[in-house]
Length: 297
Image 1 (tube, one colour):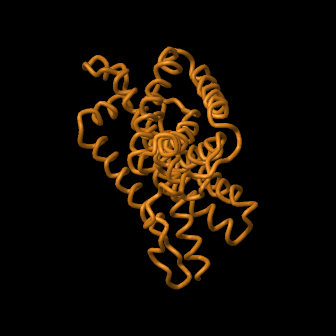
Image 2 (image 1 turned 135 degrees about the vertical axis):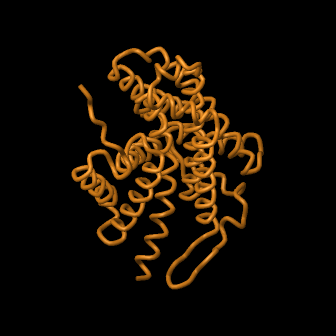
Image 3 (image 1 turned 45 degrees about the horizontal axis):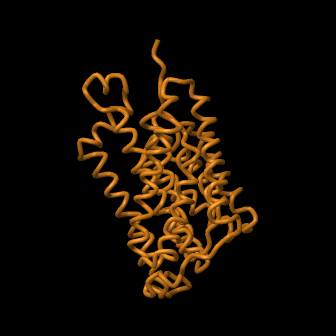
């Protein structure tokens, strides 16, 4: 029982981070039906931006985190303008290939700037209280860093829900998701809304990258690939295009991965997580919270 609770806590911590990244995938797909495979590299760059602000400019942790979010938001907008906007009317395969190309380009750019070897996070800048133990009872070890990860994730999800459900820009995003042509005819600035969607998803990805780097005390240029693939799997598991589905899929994938590592083997943790995803998709192809689309004649 103690091992189960410990693995459950680890899985939930990992799962909410996957959810943060998966939301970026699913928002972009919901608005323009594009799988942005470069999103994992935005997650990676968020961690590197944060460490650079701390080590090169001596900034405190929280300020560096906010600036990293801002940098990744701008980078997300530039990614849309440079790589995806010219291909709005092109076949989907062209945009997909471009997304993969941008992913490889950003990986190699990070290697040129920061080197290819893994680096430790600037732990001296992390507030000391985050390293302390919040709860140690019944075999469950919970640190204040894990509490911070839960709090930040839940807060960002609440803010995202408010933006999508209660603001004009959120209404415009939902309108584009239903019909871009009709939304444009109603006076919605399509390019602005799509750029905002990229900025919002990229900022959330940056937060996830920083949290993971602090949690595992390491960052490297290819870290976005594995996390990006898993977050995409989480988005598919929950139902691609569904924000609540991305959150649920991330948590399920993280818990499955942690339990697989604890009860099977850490060598098979990825396999167990993907086996859960495949099983769900076999029985519910649209995902847990996704909606089946019926083509009408």
